Length: 142
Picture 1: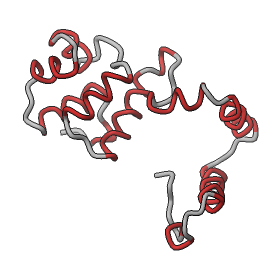
Picture 2: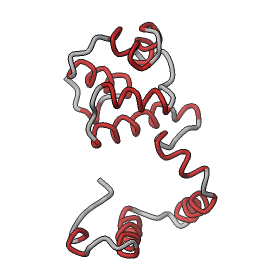
Picture 3: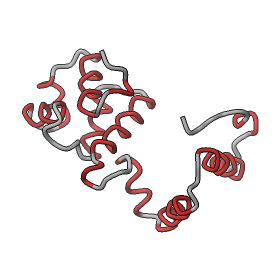
């Protein structure tokens, strides 16, 4: 069996569905799509679900925060060929805030690396009042 990292979006949601002992038909109906449509997504014959469907799937399968993040990231990876590189749960935040897009463009032009981003996150947390003991040695960019 493939590891989570090796799975694509369709494989990942299939594994989650099976782990919850849910049939493809039950899951499709629960999130408001046809079983054929759901099957096509699991089998990489169609693009990924809309953000609303992903949210419904998250709730129906009782996904943890970590599983949800992985699902959204895999959805973004699957959409790369359609120019949607950002996990769907972030797209509205980024598009609705011009300064976020400007900051990302600046980071890209300066070739910001992991360390640069960790320093930014740490600084932001400090300015937002996160206690220092919660910051100590924590890598938020895993």
